[in-house]
Structure formats: structure tokens, C-alpha cells
Amino acid sequence: MKILMVNKFLFPKGGAESYMLRLGEGLKALGHRVEYFGMDYPGRKECPPTVLRGNVALTRKLIDSLDTTWKFTAGVLSWHPDDIVTPEQARKVMDSFEAVAFAGLAEDQRNILWVRHGHAGHPELHFVIPRVELGSGKAFNPCPPGWQKAFDIFRDLLNITEGWASPDDPARARIHTPDHADLHRARLIRWGKKPGKDERADAKNAIHDYLRSLIEEGLVRNREDVLAALRNAGLEIHRIGKDYVSVKDPDSDEKLRLKGGIYAERFEAEQLEFALGAHPSPSPHRQAERTDADTGRVQHLAEELERVIHARAQFNRKRYPRPDYDYGEEDFRPLPDYGEYVQPPVQDSSAMELRDADDDGPDYRRDDSVGTVSDSSIGKRDRRAEKAYHQLFQNERHL
Image 1 (tube, rainbow, N blue to C red):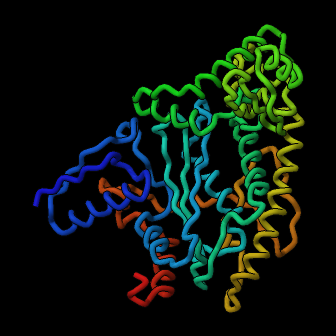
Image 2 (cartoon, rainbow, N blue to C red; image 1 turned 90 degrees about the horizontal axis):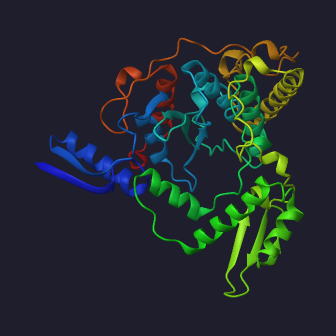
Image 3 (cartoon, rainbow, N blue to C red; image 1 turned 180 degrees about the vertical axis):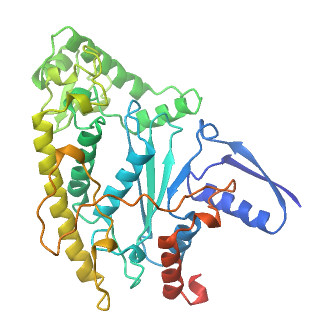
């Protein structure tokens, strides 16, 4: 048969798209000719997603086999558009992330898929982790409560050592924090569509522009000045929070929440010089500008990250014990070398050791078909996970 699959989007945006694409794969496998009609994501053809590590079919199979409420954890590591992420740096980032997420787990106890995207105009590394420990079948949470602190240390350490832009840099603060409507409008523009008229968004933008002009003239320097300027414009201050100011138009009783940036409690105008264009953007690649303060901070972050990994490793070994297994250095994905910044810390025999990542891993290649990788891409760790999968879910109803 000749089959035409029609859908609004032709990429895995959600459940409907994933179902449609997988249905198309199944029909092709039965010998039918399948064509697609719909809207692709701008830039995906010129810069298609690339599988960097893992096996798409295996990760999907593991997730689909779970009957728990939370089946997987997915996320994205995103960079500034000016940042350059080489293949070697991407491997270093993945190794460091896995050292934190899977601390204390051997290679055949876990599974992760890494895909690189570049169509949005900046580097992105997307990951998907089935929430199961493969040896026991118990639920596994790579991002338990308090995960932000651990991964912020990982993020800050790499941003400094690799010279990448930091999202916490005050010089890069936004004028305001985008809300859902702002993000939706930006998405429509990126897709080449014209956003519809939004009076609330227009009113917010008018307030942002008004305050921006006062900041550029030096008339607004802190939050108190912001509140005074809003009152002078005829707006009532309805509510004040740590990172927002809510105002009300006395004529229409319309309320608007203005969040982040210049509306935050600790706002100081000097922090926004970069955002306002008062000074040229600092180079995102600062290796030549490293200071003694950077060196000290990297040393501190590396030690903090080592402690986090050690604590998580102890927890995971206790929750997922392997009595018949002799844990060794080779069973843990180590932290990469951070160069001249860090002197390797002295560790006891139970702590993880810092060493360079292997360079002889499998070469992952993506097939033309959606959501699969070639058989030659399955490395040793994937074969162990495949074996563990079959041991865990031998009953056909799980498959």
C-alpha cells in the first residue's frame, strides 16, 4: 500500500508525534510505502539531531517496559549561541554529568541516551534516562530532591574551565524574565509565523521599554527607583515579591505581574550593562583571561563535586547492592581532567578516582529512519544493558 501520514509536526514534539512516527516505522517494516506531510522544525534538515552516546531502540524498549508512574527523566544542557562545543568537550560534559547522575553504579546497572541538537542556533545536549536500575529492577531517580545543587556545581565547574558563558553572570542578566506568553511568541517567530495580537504582552513590553529608557539615562539605579518610576507612570503597586512586582492600572483594574531582572529585590543597574549594550559582550572563550580567583574557585568546585559524587555513590551502593561484585575503579565513569586548574585531591580507598575518559568508545551513527541507530552502533555497555533488560523482563506481557 501507499500510505500518506498527515500530522501538524513531523518531529517527536509530543505523544501524538511519537505515535505517528513509530506507526510509520511499523508500516514500513511490513513492506508498505510511507510518506509524510506536515511541518518540520526549522533548521532540522540543515542541522539534524545526532546520537552521541547510547542506543535509541534499547532506551525506548526499557522505558516502554516499565509500569511505574515515573518512567524516565529527560533534560537538556544548553549553551550560549557564541559558545563552541567541540566533540571532545561534549564527551567531557557527558562523562562529568554521568559521574554525578550514576555515582556508584556500574556500567551494566544503568542506561542513558545522548542526542546533540543545533537547529535552534546554539549547542544543546539532550539526554533521556530510564528510571530503573537494571540489576534489580528497582526504581532509580538520577535527579533526587536537592539535585539542583549537585548539578549546579557540575555546571559552574565546566563553564569556568571551558570558558563558556555562565547563566548566573550578573552582566548577562535579562531585563525581565520571559513568561509563558513570551516563550510562545518567540517559538512562533522561530517557526516563521506571525504572533497574534496580545494586549497584555504589549502592555508589559511598553513598561519594560519605559523602564529600560530610564535605566539608560541613569534615572533608575535600583528597585526603589523602579517602584517610583512605575508610580510616576500612573500605575499602582499591587504586590511586591522577592523576584517580581505586580502592578494595577487604576483605570481598567488590569493587573500585570512583572518578573525577574529589573523587578527583582536585589536589582542594581550596574549588573545590566551587558544586557543594555553599554559595553561590548565579554568573550565567551576566556581561557586567556583566567585569574587566580578562577583557579581557586575551580579547585573548590572540584572538591565539592567529588564530595557530592562520593555521597551519592554510597547511597546508590546501599540501595542497589551487588554482594557478589567487587567494585573497582573501572566500574565508574570518572570526572575528566580539568587541566592546570586542579591538583587531584587525596582520596581514601572508597572514593572515586579522577582519571581521563576512555577515547575508544563505540562510534554511534544514526540511520535515516526515525528513532533508530544502526546495529554496528551498539557498544559493549549497550549489550550488557540489553542482556539485563531481557533478564528483568522475560515475561512477554512486559515486552
